Amino acid sequence: MRRRLTLAIAALVLTAATAPWQWTLPAGMRAPRVPADNPMSAAKVELGRRLFYDADLSADGTMACATCHEQRRAFADGNTTHAGVHGDPGRRNVPGLGNVGWMTPLTWADPRLTTLEAQAVVPVTGTTPVEMGMAGQESEIARRLARDACYRAMFARAFPGDGAIDFPHAARALAAFERVLISLDSPYDAWMRGDRAALPPAATAGAALFRRDCGACHSGPLLSDGRFHRILPASPADPGLAERSGRAADAGRFRTPSLRNVALTAPYFHDGSARTMADAITRHPGKAAAPAADLAALTAFLTSLTDRRLIADKDLALPDRACGMPL
Image 1 (cartoon, rainbow, N blue to C red):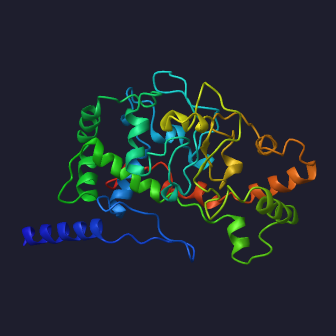
Image 2 (image 1 turned 120 degrees about the horizontal axis):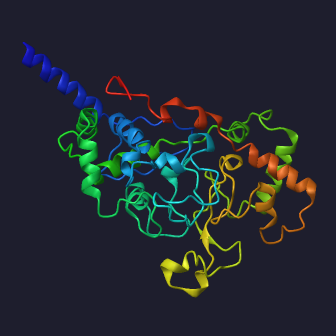
Image 3 (image 1 turned 90 degrees about the vertical axis):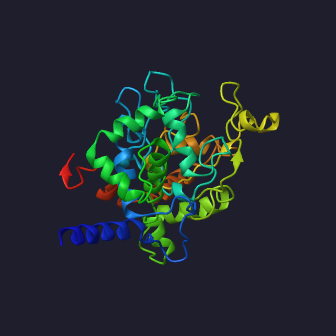
């Protein structure tokens, strides 16, 4: 009897772990692309959430993904750049992660990184710059995680039949969690759905200016065309897309950032050199002498892109329990 009960519980756990993921999205919004070898599941998302906040993924146990991606800042960090675990200077501004599941390419200037699974490797084991400092120490990550009985159970649930505790599986879980960092519930979204009272008059005026002057590059539901453009003068210190393409014409070109939650993700540009939204706007070509009224209207509109649900959602925050026990 006990054996049958154990098998029944195991079957329920397996079913929960492999059940199709149910996306909750606005009408007309398609789910992000999910690689065939990393299907979504609640167990995998929960594992990825715990890993996202776990500093054991860094060399000295002081830096987690969440160190640079703070929920209260729409998963950006508010710094010009962020130093690595050994004090290595950061190279580029930390972007927010809202809606990252739809973004491609994923970084400022590397068109090769098109999946979250591949991108998760970069901060943990990358060397240019060193961030979390675990290059060549992937086996140490596995050792640290495997010593925790709860992690062993969580990996088994997230990857039924293949619950190996290693960095590739950890990267897949991190990618699953990042895909649920969905930010499509701002006042702007309510306004687009027909709630004319969702935006104040200044933001409505800013929306018209935005469509006219900014919409070519900041387009679509993510407010990014996903392409590479040169806004600031090219700098030898960071050649941008040219570093990967080898083409001199690509110097200074960086991917258009999404503007969702932009009021929470200052400073701006790939180098974090613009401290305010007005500063960022006026540094765009043709905007240096923008009238103060236009800047105020655009700023009001950009502020309406803030999704308070994203930054308040407890299911995306640092978990306080795992396997039914306090962390």
